[in-house]
Image (cartoon, rainbow, N blue to C red; front, top):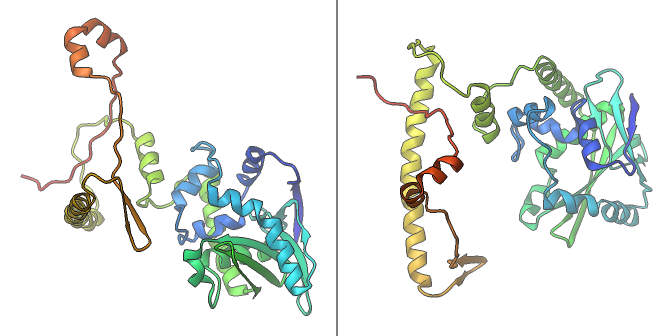
Length: 313
């Protein structure tokens, strides 16, 4: 069962974000499980521990919110099932770190009271909705059912602005049990301010740069044996980056040759542009020579740690 933690009706966006930091929400579930395509566990951990600034909602999230009422109304129109908006932030009584901000609630003929979730999707993602729902949304609705105790979820989606689909998802006890276990472990890391395993995200790189800004000791240390495989991974990746960088440059050069003096080119559904851009930049070298005092006054000194991997001599 769930308790009402706060009313979200007319709640400012930044306040809503603050409330979300008090636990793990439905959209966080796929991140905790490591399958989210847009966010990594380390980034979510940094968010929950107040180590990254507020981020404005992107265009997709903005329009998803704006169209939520339309999707809800269309679902009711097509199914005859009334959906009640849920303007509340819910908290699991049994697992207080689990939160839920439902799009709505409705009733299933045999499963009783259930969750309603509204989605919008790009036309390019239509295939993901053919036989099931995307994995991250499956985890999201199972998370909601874990919080509320409900036995099912109706999920409706508007695809590409002109295709409407809806599905009923039953409660999956095995999946919910796994979610509770993973989210519990993650929330413990948040409370103890212990980062999850490092990954390849920009957030992880930012965390390490801020955690270890300067090299203090000049002593050589012996790395664990697991470092050998990581070094090999790094070297292979560098080789692939160089290979793909050359292929990318080749394609770019040939496309530029095709465009010539033209700014825009079309190929099937693709638009290729090569535009003229004018910029004004400060000539630091000339300023340093001709006005050294002024240069010194306004020059910013920065420091960073350079990372490299090379064979030992």
